[in-house]
Amino acid sequence: MRYQNITLSIPKDVLKKIKHIAVEKNTSVSGLLTQQLLEIAAKDDNYKRAKANQLHFLKKGFDLGIEEKITWKRDELYDR
Image 1 (cartoon, rainbow, N blue to C red):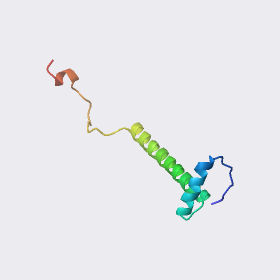
Image 2 (cartoon, helix red, strand yellow):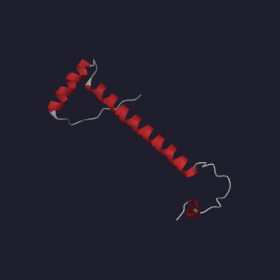
Image 3 (tube, helix red, strand yellow):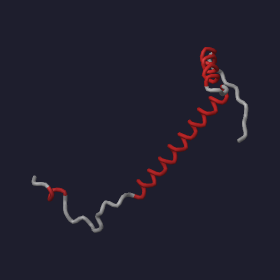
Image 4 (tube, rainbow, N blue to C red):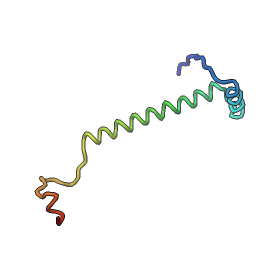
């Protein structure tokens, strides 16, 4: 995996807390951010894959078990 440096602007109090969290997890701020960004990207990929899969099923349709043309009308099924 190739890396690229970026510049972030984060409130100082948030950065201070994140540095403490990184130390507790035996990693760096960069490591924490990378992990979170990878999770966000993976969730987005999973969402797009699931959406495409569902759209495929909607376009394909579902077998409702009706092999022949329906010969009855809705009103015939109910006493009205």
